[in-house]
Image 1 (cartoon, rainbow, N blue to C red):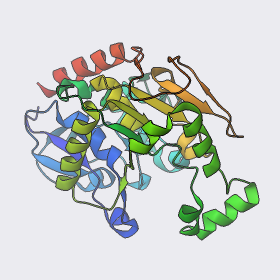
Image 2: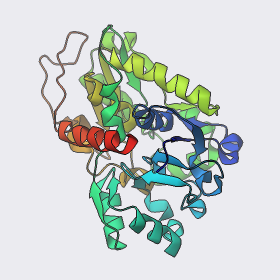
Image 3: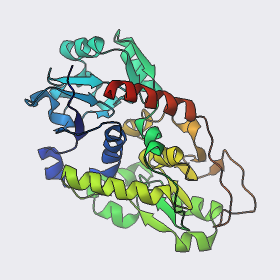
Length: 326
């Protein structure tokens, strides 16, 4: 058995061409990396099939994949499949006989969401719900220097503003036709309903979507991102790979569940939503919260206590990854 380890990266011509990546992908790889004594190979997720280096073990937590035709990975990769997501958009392309045989060889497959678990089971593959590997990030990142920083990260990111839509004319045209062009008003309404104006004014607004970068830079940015989240006063987001690390690190977090109206997003969340303090937003922009807080609106002094439903899943992931990495 190999004592060398590989870590998944997001380097590919398809990302160079589109010139952006989701920092959340490197957050996921950082979660896997923390269990490994060394990292001997950085292996792009969408080109694992062409890997020709030494035999390596890899924790394979990821979305599979932007080039589904390139699955399964090379035989020199010994995988631990946990926190897997297979998106509904690539189901027809990824489940070749070779891919099914590969999954069956390495079953049981730990799945990040119920959708993926049920999909694999329907293909005759032994699968279970594992939760997300980012729930283990509290093993490395600690709340040891808490600040007054409040972060709003990609809140209702699919409800684009008019300037954002003008940069994407095809999407703008579709949203005029389907009545979604002015959904950015929903976001403003939600923020103003639940958060004190001073909190919004002084908060830091950020996005996980960044220009394309190398793997080395991706890991550096993810590390900095996680350190800031670990010591934040409060985080409000619609990104699971911001919200789940916050749960892991004990940072108060509110997940705003709104603006997701396509199958790419909707199949990713089943099994994760119950972990969060949530603000749920319906198609008309009406919002309700599944948690209570003192006062009319959330301010810098409001005490937000995270749920603890995720803890057992995190513990099991830590144990499984530690055994695999020995």
